[in-house]
Length: 402
Image (cartoon, rainbow, N blue to C red; front, side, top):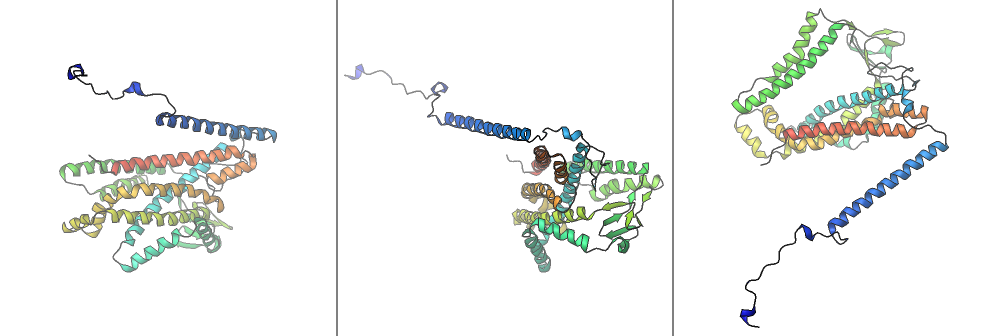
């Protein structure tokens, strides 16, 4: 064959396009999809079998199923409640009381554990040898003692270590500390307190709005208003002015009558033991997170701030902690979730949280499946809501990459 017989030009082979995709079992994409389908069907079949087997057993044992029991009368009393509850109320109301009690202990515990954790984290990095060693001893000791054991310890100290109501300590007039709990003066049935609460909430909202505007103003002009006196005036000053303008609200003072106190508000030993245990235990972990977050900030930031003449408190508040937040927030979210879920240990010391009330309901109705599902659903919703809020806040303080 001569050169003249050769083709004038040679075309390169075109790359395979979408038409070259074949539905073959040897294709890794097809295999991955098939495995996902098989796994999904297996999960559905196992779930179907378990649900069917459970329903058959319940029917065989003549145990009622469904959530119709929520409309029945509970028939038991709850020691602590944020809403009115009596034995004549329904199980649904009892569940509401349990959820509110869980949210109360979790919310207060998260705030106090955060404050104590930040103090511990900063103290561990203190230049004072004694402060750093005390903080280190606290963290290493508390983290390695089981939380349930700590709850038993606090409960024993509060119930066995304090005197009875007749011999109660009175550190301040109208405040009594005994093995029945801490009795405090409480607002009486007076309309002025509703106005004070409304103005207090309005002050918090106004403070947040002004703080956001102040941050934008500082970013554009470099000038900043002093937020501490402004916030104090709005949150504390305005409610006090409303209270004084209304002539002062009536106070319900606790009084010893017989073998116990009447009136006022009570911080029960069960609530206090659970709160102390959760706060002290969780704060030890948050303290380590704060310490690691501070150490993650480059040393040059500290040196530059010191060269500008910032005090140590200003350095920590304006330079170190704002940058350390990007490292601190994600693991701290996990600790908040742990504190919320650990509050279920309240059943061990008698605090009526959601798990305790659900257990009582299960014992009375025999509907364990519905009770356990209710517990799982409640903690799932609370945990997902808390995670959403913390992830939203984390996105606000995270660095935006270009």
